[in-house]
Length: 277
Image (cartoon, rainbow, N blue to C red):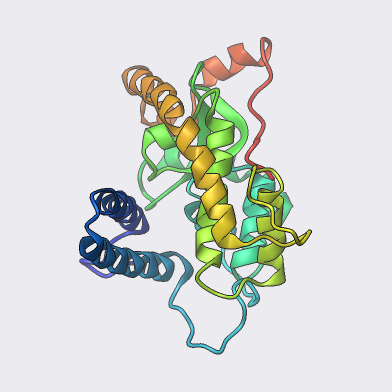
């Protein structure tokens, strides 16, 4: 999908959103309410632009609830949209659940089985011929492909690596992003069910009504726990990413070291997609 010159990419918008959130917190900490209000307004504009970039142009109200319309896209585009919304390595089941809740159509589970292998074959045949590739998450210890976890090649290497704390931090990250998006509209029943599955595994996120989740409460609870784990997880990921940049070629940085994967198979179980709620 082509993008007009000068229009920020979703990754650029995500970086800007993170910067603005930090700036809002700093302004509130110093008591500068006027600055905080201005920054929040800019943050809302950036979030709206991210919605348009990832989910398409918004429809005027009244309209269908978020996640109600259905349509068709190539499978790799569907997976890319779901992963972009999640912002973390994810297992096929979670990817399918997120896509069917927030986007038009569904992802056939059978098509995901060979998707990563097809992407690797395409990259090795014609490197960087596509704007992005759907690739494997890499284990922090062996830099081997983490079984059952997909990522996007345009993400920073650190984001595509999973260490000891990453399953939990990725689960929490994956909870925050859909909850924040759902909080900007009227969540469909599919979205509510997805949010409930996240909330039931996060302390303080569950409301009094079983089967439903308040998006704001879910995002706040997930973010609070994420703040506890993020720094040690970041250190693990950065150390592993530094090793990967020294030891792996371009293809291995995306799809993992085959030799290490073979050696690992007889010694330890692979990480199996704990982001799946």
